[in-house]
Length: 193
Image (cartoon, rainbow, N blue to C red):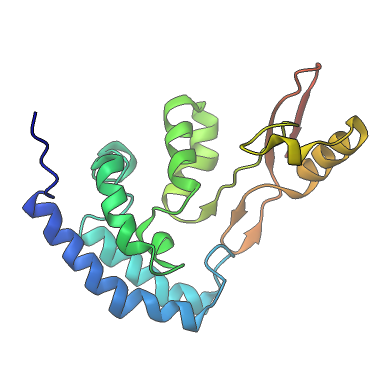
C-alpha cells in the first residue's frame, strides 16, 4: 500500500499565503505586544489585531479545524497540523487564526456535548476569539508523572477551592471568573460562577 504525503495543491496555496502573512503581519506583534496573546486585548491592540483576524477569515483559514456550522472550513486536524507548523513561529499567530490551544479542543467538546445554554454563553465567544478557555487537571496522581502530583486530602481540597475561586475564562476587556469543575468522585459537585 502506497501512502501519499503530498499536500493538496489548493490547501498548499493557503499554507503559502499563511507563511507570508505570519512573517509580515503577525510576527511583528510578538515584539509590539510580547507575552500578551492570552490577555484581554486593549482598544489599541484590537485596532491592529481585529483586521488581521478579518483577513484570515477572508482567506478561509479562521478556525480551519471546525466545520462550517461553527465558522470554520472543516479541514480537520491533519490540515490544522500543517497550518500549525507555520503558526508555531509566533505566539500571536494561533490567536489571529482562531486555532489557539486549548480552545480548539474545548470548542469541539462544547459544540458536540454542550447544552444550548453553554453553547450560547461559551462557544460563540470562544469561536469569535473573545474568550479564552483553559485546561486544568484536578485529579490527584494523574498525568504522565502522577507521582509528582501527590498531595494530601487537605491540600487537594484547598487546591480545588483556589481553582473554583480563581480559574476560569477571560473575556476580552474584563475578567469572567467562572469555572466549571467536574463532579467530585467522593460525592458532591464543584463549580463557581
